[in-house]
Image (cartoon, rainbow, N blue to C red; front, side, top):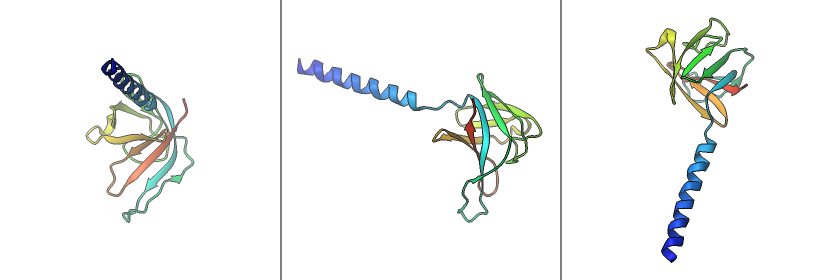
Length: 128
């Protein structure tokens, strides 16, 4: 009888932890607005700085995205329009598909790492 209770407890423990992990994940699908940029000069002391920009990215079902700005560079402008595909860790703009961009979601914010010699990143908040 003790073994049945022990086995039941172990199963409930794993089921509870599996559900909690899935609920904590943030989906990239939706519309995101640029709010901060990080441009490091090579000294390793770069920090995110707030920016005024109307640049947005919309991630759709089907692993496609559209943006109202260039995603091949860390530009702040909202022109030209661009698009491409994404996976669980990378964004691949159609116009520069040979060099995918890495991204992560940290504290509910989307952080995209551009392919610069020194670190350059953009941080977005979810709008929709």
